[in-house]
Length: 478
Ligand code: G3P
Image (cartoon, rainbow, N blue to C red; front, side):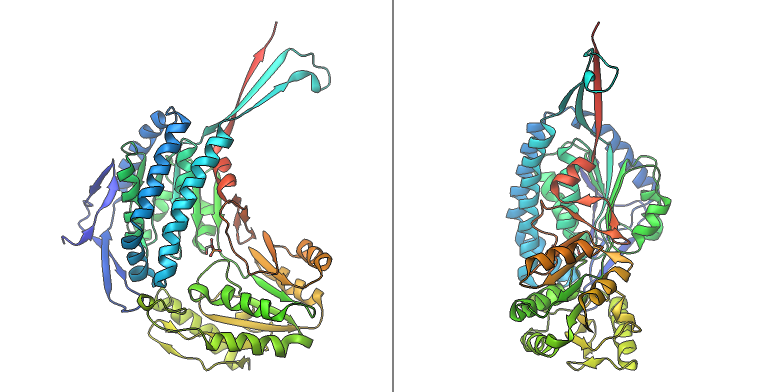
């Protein structure tokens, strides 16, 4: 089995003692594209052990040197954009241009994190005691930010590289070591990205990447006593992890049902453009995709017409041809999406396009006149299918948004900024975008979900802070 990609431990590329591999299925061809090592629990133990040791000296490495290495890794990552993007095309069917964008964005994210880390970790606080009642000025308190230890990073398939480095870079700049468990689809892109960090010359054992079956090493990793923080992006698994994990900080982003509220006074061309981009980019496989449109009845016909005109222009086909709509990540995902579509059909939603599927490729579909009794009104398809619910008042839209168990982002289209701010206040989501589709970036903006959408806040600055602890030293004067 010479063609099985090796995993990364102790600064070296290794074969697993299991002798087993995990197959990565190309979503387009539905054939095995690559294989990765199926690591064992003993191999995870080893990685944890070396991560602990490497972290001790890394935390004593000057901050500017840590930043320098991250800048180097960022540059190497950008140099390797073509082969990494090719993996993304083959493993997760990301359109060719978007795949390159993901790698470049990742390089930028690593560099920005290095700079931000130097800024925010380079300073602490100085407090005096006599501001609290009963105290004289006899105590000086110095604060600094210290690393947590070993960070476990688990990114999802849809941004295997970008959502890995958004965890790796803050962990490293803050003086932590890092264990990465890539998603199966996207594992090879992750390994290649790790290779860029290897080439940059980070100390042995500081970064490790273990591949394998979730059933074999998933719980073992997340419940491992050597882990001091878990940063996870993905689906329901995150809820299970949060219940099993120990008393450690958790950073989680677990999907959404982002609503797009369109008012009567909205710029309907702008709204339609954002709905198509927001709903159908990467075939709807983004946590921040527009997942339900809530439009005022009086403008609904016009909006739907404008959206349909744009949907008709979307290209459908293989990621290699840089088509807008490409096969969804797996057959089970395609089946799940189809289940939602069939449920809507049975309950008489209006199909703006004909439902069409070939293998994992699903043609873009707008469903009008969706009602709350349909599954698609609430569930996250993670595919190119978008429901439209017609509303008769803003309150109705807000109510639908807030009735969801998710609360990642939302957006509102109106020319009345006062109204938009009030609606933003009323929407129970981590972020509300006014007159644009939901999106995580720019990557230094805070990014967070409430309810089942997550724990904690991400974005470069928040992630660095989250991966540190405050340490204080108090000088007691005589
Ligand atoms: O689905 C992952 C989430 O982080 C989305 O990121 O950049 O597509 O808004 P983005």
